[in-house]
Image (cartoon, rainbow, N blue to C red; front, side, top):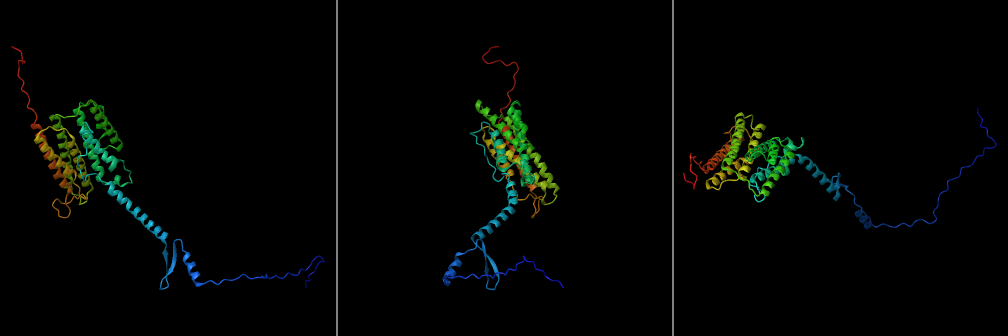
Length: 359
């Protein structure tokens, strides 16, 4: 049996009893009227949403004014994100073929054809965008029609600048540079450099006060070049029309838009060249401009490569071939009209006596 031993220094302290606090004077209580309770409830509003009970006992969240703003902002953000890429596809596919017309200010340019080349290329790399410079992820860089259109247009314009340089003697540094820079593989930077070169060429003509004019023989060479474009692209679209790899054929779309690019280049050249003052030439020139404009403005929603006689899926490659054939015929008629006004060659008379001398 254990025994608890206590030492003398141990003292047992009795726990103090908890003293209860007594309030001498209680706080006065005020009676709250029901009207005050209702007023305070109206003053307290949730920041964004609150729970509201329905007659069936279910609860739903009722949005406040700021909650509605946040909700519709999120909806708009989702719509913008979803529609951004399709919108870029629509805008990136625009090649400016809706309304082909004369855009050269002849009061500004001493050489109108140089102004036509500059204006047409600037419209693309400044306003519409140059597909060759587009990023690989962008719709413009992945489209089929626009790159083909711009490549054919630049190639045709480069050939014309090369011909003009040759007709000018081939010694002009600005024309030589522009002819080297404008090609089917040209980038936007190269086209800008070619623009600067053509501007420099035109300023030199203005300082010399000499307007650029072409002889009937030179005009015949220029028309022969335009005729070669019609022949070349008739062959391309004709090949696609015969192949018919299906109603929606990417190669057919490229062929049609390459032909359209050459057509807009031909229209620009015909519109800006110097022409002889003859009524028949003016009539044939207007007919040629109308024919090339019709080919340049040919704009199906989707390029179809079905049966030429099909009622559902037509063949736009064959249609473009027909338009190019009309443009080629009008160009040939214009060339005939220009040749008709050339002065006949003077006969060479042997041992001719000079006027005012006696034999």
